[in-house]
Image (cartoon, rainbow, N blue to C red; front, side):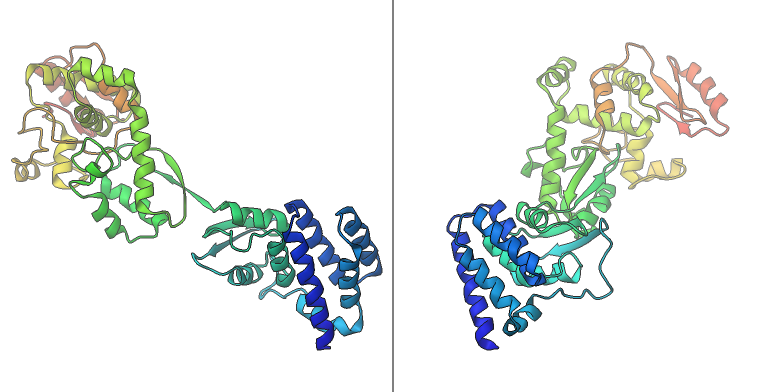
Length: 401
């Protein structure tokens, strides 16, 4: 029995050597198909093997010998080695998505075992032979994959070699602060959320990515991104900061210079506009209020900056809370001009509004119950608007009572 197995192994090894000297992947796929037919053990398969062997341009004797060795009773041990492997719990239905992970440094044998366990292949011996024919045993890339059950060997191995890993969509909404971004990002980096918050929140983190700063607040651009599971945190910041940089065309840079604002100041103003506006259509008018106040040296009195100084959103902004951060550099009720940096991540609409305020002379606005705003030119007009909207109002904007 051992002699037959050794003979078969010798023939297959010779076949592999022939293939590795010059076969294409298509030829390798054909050989794998033939090997599977041989294992099936039918006379028709044997005849098919002979025809395909001639078409591939190498001596029929190799496959004929392999087929003969396997089909003879003495080859039953090899047949057992090549028999379909049962998957615990049964095979997934064709078309069902199967998720699995190839660990960094895994051997091809370990990878094959994973594919068997997940029900993606049933003949590990010949799958390994097929991979060797293609010279791809050492070319599989680590990562998490999502492939359909019933995927053929060529497509399966192509996906592993090309690294078509499972991609996860991550959406960062407009206005998100770094702590909220960190929570979203932690899930795909597979790092603890606290670790991500610390790394994103470094005061000098902006210098590594050549951003205006201070820190990364406001510069991780809100958008939907696709990342592979377990992606390094630096790669996430790379993608988001690059998306931010793509916003700054030469025309927008020229417009900021025309307004007398630095890039950091535009983003800071845009982050306040983003936090105030419920509807993008009102952003240019809100922007105009702040531009007008900056021009005449009036305090911005933007509630979102005080909330940022307090550490985040609160149902109501009370005077006692405002007094507790009276000296905070982000408190625009007590500190003149723009705060030191952004208070969140503004989207393109808010940035556009910061660069292109409406041509109006408003100095005040107050939020209405439906989220819209009433704009006013004078304090007396504004106080009347506040009185009208006080019941059920979301809160007052600049100069609100």
